Image (tube, rainbow, N blue to C red; front, top):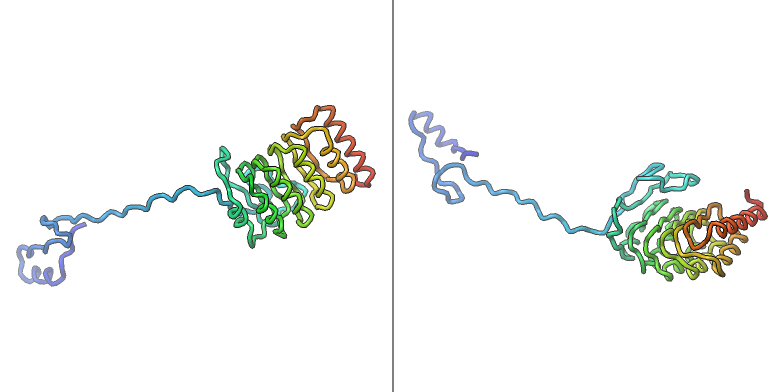
Length: 244
C-alpha cells in the first residue's frame, strides 16, 4: 500500500544515515505522500436476462424421468432449466439455434410459450438424431400442430408429448392424417380438449393402419366410460395387427 522508495534514494540513505529524502508526490497529485488511493475495479453491470438456453447433458435421467424407458440414452439430451413459471418466449430463430449441427436425441421445450413457431418446429424435426420431443404446455396454435404433424413422416421422431396445449378436433385431425406414415410410437395427448367426434374416429383409423405402442388421452373431454371404450377398441385393432 505505501509508495516504494526508489533504489538510488535507498542507496544514498544507507551511505549517509539519517532521514530519508522526502518522497516525491504521488502520481495522482495527492499532497500528503501517504497511501495513494487505488482505483477500485468496478465489476461490469450484470447482463440482461436472456431466453433460456439449453444445457447439454448425458445420462439416463435429467431432472426427472423425461425419456421413455424404451429408448436408449446414448446420445445428448437437451432440456430447459427448471422454471417456476412459463416466463420465457422463444422465437423461431432461437429454436433452430438449439439443434443446428447437434446430435441431440431428446429435446424438451415444455412450459415455454412457443406458439406461432410451427415452421421452426417442423424444421427441427429434420435433425437426424432427434427421437423425442416434449412440447407440454407450450401454447401451440392450430397451424403449429398442422405444420409439426406434416413433418412427422420425414422425421425419425418416436416420442411426442403434446399435453396441455388445448388441442381440439382440428389439431387431432391434423395429427391423425400423418401418424400412420410416421415413426411415432409414444404419443401424449393428455389434458387437452379432445372429445368424441370425427377427429377421434380419424385417430382410430390411423391407429388401424399402424398401431401406436403408447397413446395417452387422459384428462380430455371424454368420460371414464368413453375413454375405456376407446382404449378397448384400440386394443382390438392392435391385436388384429398382430402386435402384442
